[in-house]
Amino acid sequence: MAVREDPEYNEDRALARLIPSFRGLRVLEIGAGDGRITRKFADVASSVIAIDPKVEDIAALRAALPRVDARPVGIGDLQLTRRSVDVAIFSWSL
Amino acid sequence: MVDALKRTRSWLRPGALLVDLHPMAAPALVIVGDTIAGPIDNGAAPARHQAATDAIAEAVNNGLFRIGDTIEFDFSTYADTLDELQDYIVSEWREARIGDTTMMRARQLGPSADRKPRARERVSASRLVAVG
Figure (cartoon, rainbow over the protein chains, first blue to last red):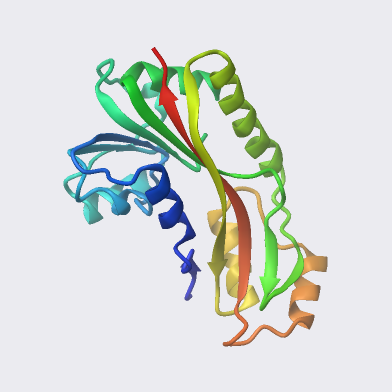
């Protein structure tokens, strides 16, 4: 199967307008799935926590982006320190 | 959804940012070339997407965030054939499929290598600033 998502890169442009640079930022991504959006900032962010309740998606994300702290949990089960995040992203998950 | 935003707000430092990407309430469409074949049947998705929009508005009204910027864009998923597109939507989207009427119209539009079928969603993207 040859399925291509967003070959026009409209999502990339939208994200770049909203957050021009992720460099040095502590990022929390909610609903990360297999990391389609995570890839756009994982290399430059200071740290990335990516969560999704789908275990198989998080396994794929972890394999592709090993420096990401990928957790197979929903937001209701996530425990984080208060005021420890610079950018939170709801990736088609709200 | 508002609870999720409240919970997330507690993790953000003051002045930090929240980005929300979610499809808009309008139905996703099947398009062949530049012609709309029809809507995709995606069950309760439009209501869920509207609820997300409402939750953002409520969080802003409650003083958790202020709006920094909001934009809209098209997100298209292309397949080589209509059957591939149908299989993808059924397997990857929640409770969605291309209904018979839209599928028939799409076939009539003659998808080809130069006119690949696609599913087009309209997406809202917002940057919110944590208040307080």
